[in-house]
Each structure stands twice: as C-alpha cells, then as structure tokens.
Image (tube, rainbow, N blue to C red; front, top):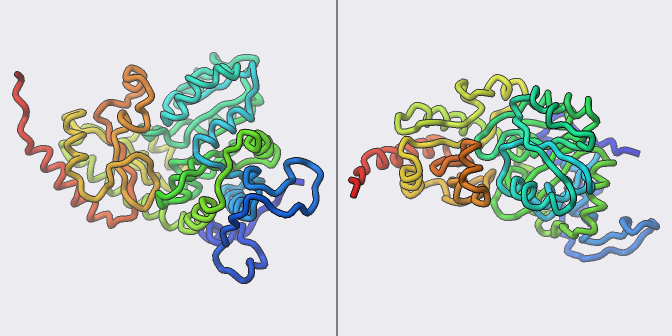
Length: 398
C-alpha cells in the first residue's frame, strides 16, 4: 500500500517535525546518529528487507525519507551519496537498453557529461530538447522514448522551461517525467504537485544548506522510488548515517533560509541590473527575464541563484572575483555562505567551449549563490568590486 505521509499544512512545520521518530529515541529531541553498519534482523524474507547501511534503511535514512516525502508531497523518497548518484541511478532505473530519453539542452555540467559520455555505454540513446519550445518535442519523439528530463531552473542561465507542457507531453506519450529541482528547492517549487513523476535533488545544496556534506535525493511514487532503490542497493551509493544526520539537521531550517535567500537574491539582481558595468543579469524574478511570467505562475519564490556578465568579459569577471570580499570563490551553491564562481571553469568545465557557447555559457559568465549574509553588506561589497573593476587600466595592445 502506498504511504500516506501528511503532517502539517505548512512546509516550515513539516521541515522541522515530519519524519521524526515517535516516541522520540530515549527522549532525544535531536535525531541520534545510528552509526551501525548493520542491524538485528527482525523479519522479512527479501534481501532488500535486511537492515544495512548500504541498503539505505537505517533509522537515519528512514527519518530523512519520510521528511522529504512529506515536504515534496510524494509517496516515498530516497537519499543517496551525491546529487550525481541520484541523477545517474534514477535515469538508469527508469531506462533500459534500447530506450530513448528526451532531455533539456541546458543542464548542470555533470548531468550533461553523464548523458553524453556514459548513457551510450548502457545502450540508451537521447535527444536534447529546447525546454521553451514544446512544439519541437514531437519531432524528436521515438517509439522507444520512455522518459523526459528537465531542470526547474537551468544551471547556470536560470532559464525556466515550460513545465506544464512537459507534464502534458509526458502524460500524453506515457513517459516518465523527471526534474532536477535543486535550484528551486521544495520551498519554491514542488514538482509532484504539478504532475511530475520524480523530483531529484543535489541535497548538498539547499536541502542541507551548510556546505558540509555531499548527498542526493529522489522523491516520487512508491513504485518508481522502489525501482531506484533496488538499483541503488546494488550500485552501492549509500549515504553515511553521519551525513544523514547533518542533512536531517540542515533541512529543519530550509524554509527560513530559502525565503531569506529569495528576497536577498531579488534585491541583488535588481542592483546588478542597475549597474552600467553589467551587460546581462539572469534571474527569473526580474521583469526583463524572458520567462518571468512563467516563473511567477509556477514558483512560490524565484530562488537564491543568479548569474551575470560584465561588459569586460572573461578578464573583467576574473577581476571581479578577486575583488569581492564576502562571497567565497568556490563551486557549489545553496549554503548559508554566499558562493561565487565562473561556470566555464567549474560546473561546466567538462563541456567543450563550443557546446558552452551554443547554450550561452560564456567564459565570463559569473554564477552567484546568495547566502544568508545581510543583503546590504553584499550590495556594498559588490559596489566596491564593480567600482574597482571599472577603474582598472585598460591594457594597451602589444
């Protein structure tokens, strides 16, 4: 029987209380770390009923699964060792040799590399689709197409695909619809409520929010999540109980963190758009964003991620990163610390420059993950960095 996991009306309350063991373990308010590789066998006849860390069914895993399922409105959830473990295992659980995948053309670099460099080894083919052009999807559909995959907001250009069309298309053609919801987080978008079959996360990012673990998650129906779990049990991408504990703790502040980051990112995006040194700002909360109306209809908030370019291109971007004081120049996103990076050198370094430029990911594009620092301090920091870049002498040609 499918689980019926519903607790409280508001996500913030569920983030704190859903999935907590009742009665509490020896009265402990915080979920303890069950640092045991195996557990006493109490019944069950199937291999997957064994209680063992690699099978992702310790008390720490179970509490997380229930919390995630409640927050995103799914029947079941599964955590694993990384976001890429979640993506790769889910795709391989949904698709088999001879199947075909439709996948959005602007993706996180790791996902792009997995699809373009590894899927073929499993006998799975794919075609890229433009998430904003539903009319073009039919021509790429094949008799063996089994799934469609998109991102809620693309990394790093913050494009918002026509998600309603994705769901309609998937249902019409009997496809499994998968969406990477990392950038939005469940605070801003809950894909299952909109008809998606599976929601995936790099839990390293907003779900944990403290830049101290690597983890992944998938949420959906019991049947589909069960398929993913059975494959994961054999691939071995389990999440350690201590990492489970940290993710569990981090999720309790998810609602307040992301709501603050939403507001701060919108103010910063508007500030950057007002500066003449900036040539482009990518943020769905700006009225100038090409999918602003769609984002407003779909999302409860526009997220804490933005990207932008300076008129000086790569040189100006590198100079800007040297001059900011608050953001940490580092890959990843979604933490309490603001992080800033050039995707061409980090998240999308595995893509060829030609492929990056086709998508609009230039060598000077800067991606910024807004933390929970005071917005006014971040604006002031950006101001001094932009002023310094503007005053730099222009190198004379040799």
